[in-house]
Length: 142
Image 1 (cartoon, one colour):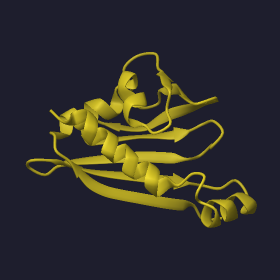
Image 2: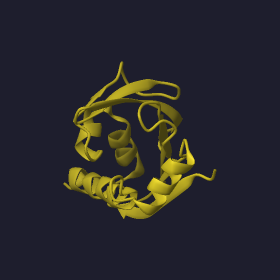
Image 3: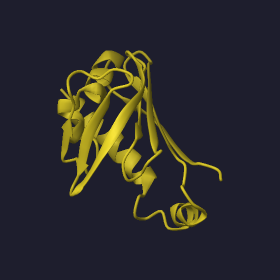
């Protein structure tokens, strides 16, 4: 079964270090991650760390799979949406940072794949990725 992938590329008017710091600060994740109510981490994040995230009544766990300051950050969900991978790539382009957000989901069954492809309204990944980017812009504005 093939994975379902989504990619969004856009810009945030801030230096790459500032965007990376915001993305990787567990205390600020609930500010930019849509639907996130709380994040619990043992300390500053690094590759291999796991941290707990709550989306309403749904708790889950993320594992950091990419942590390359200040250019790449990513996690894999280890909870209900097991295997969903979210990666951020940052490139400073002069006056702004180009942000590429990629999400890949490997359905666990044919039924899940059909629901994910034909009924995407529940997860609506493109809308969520756009909200992440807009939330980052809103937080970073001077």
